[in-house]
Image 1 (cartoon, rainbow over the protein chains, first blue to last red):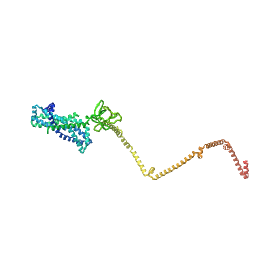
Image 2: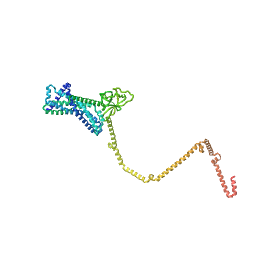
Image 3: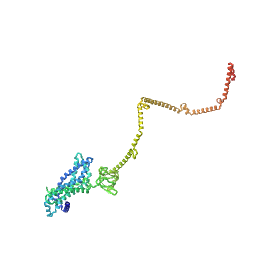
Image 4: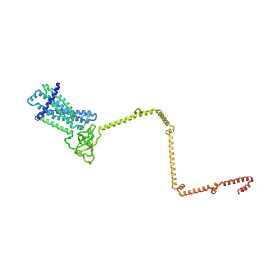
Length: 250
Length: 330
């Protein structure tokens, strides 16, 4: 019962945080440097790990698909499988998980320590709402950066699949054939679906991490607990939301 | 690292993202929205099958556009086709839904139509024809399988029998079982006959086994041949005779073909008839000789008298014999 109340409190607090942050949206142009800083953190510094991960996910997909499809002569459809999987599911999902692990944890840790060391209270005392300078730039940055990260993840994953499908001996699929089937079966709608999903995931991850960070109470030990909680809740929400989003976007 | 540098990186990164989204869009949608040139045609079908927006429209296998929209229009389904503006489609061209693979990628196939026929105007409706889809073919195959099963069932009934009636093999078996003695006897006789034949017994055996008979047969055949040659010669001669007769040569020819000879013959016959008539009536010397027996009687009487005279002559001697003969005759 106590836990249930805590969960409901968390949901309510998060929603209140969201409303307050959105209410400060008109102040965003004045916080451009802060926004840019968050974009740099969320987008630019996440790019290498997103690229590496996507390349190998595409490669593994091609490898597995080649292994399964080769036995019934459908290996030219590897392109369509990798294309659709990356665009609709794995691209946005992997970016969101990386975001939760790399950016979400950082946000939760930063905000939790600010809260624990009463920096947030100091801001409030100075009549600076923490939602305005701590939450809004991050939300805006993730909205702008998520599609960029996702489309890069998709393209790198497609090329990774193509390289693996071409270079592995028992598949040996020509890249022309790979991209021909990829283009035939993958439409821009699939990519757009993935971008919408990524947008929702990123937004939710950042919002949850901000909320958990800002609601941390206690001493330094709670900072670590807050980070763990933020990442776990983010991952769970990503997967749950993924199901419902996929269903509603089909 | 300064804030300005970071901002520049973020800007570059964002532009890269936007560019990539645009590239993906242009590649995957064939830049449809960017260059929506061309004109629309409407194709109505009973069933669009797996046809969906973005599928190819091909004329004689060459891509000339894509399916812009699929919709229901009353009691039929319509596909709106976006056609390349450089392609003109004859108004008698036929559109059908083709299948590019077993996995259900469909496209609209349009034939070339006739030359010299006016082209379809934008927004016009193209003539369509239904194509057999895999489901229909499968249904027909299923029906065929049912019929085949029925036919095989009937055949098996014939072979195995039905409702207590024996099948064809059972009947054959029964026939053989019932007549096995006769069949055995026949086979034995047949065996004996062939044995005899092998041993050269009987006419047929000799004919088969004896070379002498063969030689004789050959000789007989050559005799027959010679006889035939002779017969041919005779026939040739006869033909020559007939030809001579036909040409009126020789006695027979004269008789048959000479009119004068015919007339003479008729006259001879008439004379002969006249003579025989007279003879029958007893006219003339010969007639009387034949028909009048008085002459016979007189001759008989004379001979009797002569007989008596000869008897008397025997008694009176030879000299008186002459006198007696003379006295009897004169």
